[in-house]
Length: 225
Ligand code: ADE
Image (cartoon, rainbow, N blue to C red; front, side, top):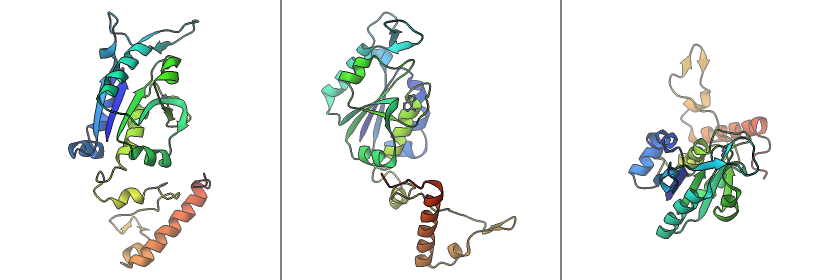
């Protein structure tokens, strides 16, 4: 998979991709993440990427030209399956959307800032809008990193134990069961006996029951959509 992320603040995207699972996925060539600085596609004297809103009002609006030029250059090189604008009023990210997107070959993620992008970007250049939740961030960069993480970890081979993505919360419409590690007892707080039993069938049954119980209690609507 190739992920191209378009932003006017590329530094914000340095650390999420330079450590741990997302770094390893790139080292193993399972994903290529390329961050593009929209300022390098600006043709204005000061390489600006925003301007005042027509009609007045507070807040700057990201201009269409640098975004269009960057997307055009990328589209000349390969076909993109989705061009996604990160926006608080987009479709809500969930596990099912992450699963869908993890099957795509090439994706563009566009990060908005200020008051957002010129509406013509949304009308003519992008294919989808994604929100990571009903709250407003200062920009789309952190949201793009969240979306990218949720997708990349699902690519086969990214997680060392492939089944661990399959047993994630939400993957089967259930939240994950509790997990424990050593010591078996700490300050008198004990690990459930069954997990120490070595009886695989019983452990699996216990985990499944715990998942069902937790889902009912914490996310009763999960898996019903
Ligand atoms: N940009 C600002 N807030 C956002 C959100 N909640 N989701 C996606 N992009 C955003």
